[in-house]
Length: 67
Image 1 (cartoon, rainbow, N blue to C red):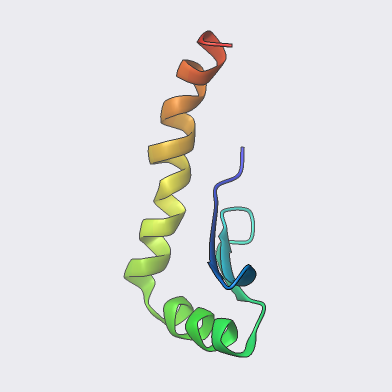
Image 2: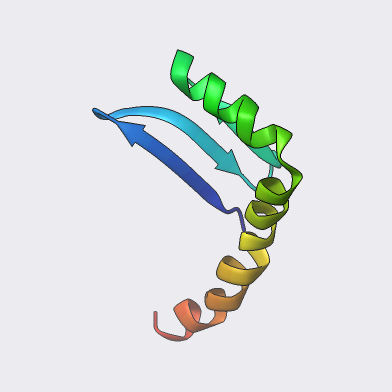
């Protein structure tokens, strides 16, 4: 299971957090700046890393039971 959160503007992906990478990655000039700022803040990174357990793993059994 992988948690991914992406930010888009005008149909272009600016920045993405992936739980398998463990940090933000920027795809545009603005996205790279945002990713660098967010990656410097340990509280933001720890919050995003916890989303895999708090969101994905919590809901996966519910999703499988409803399929």
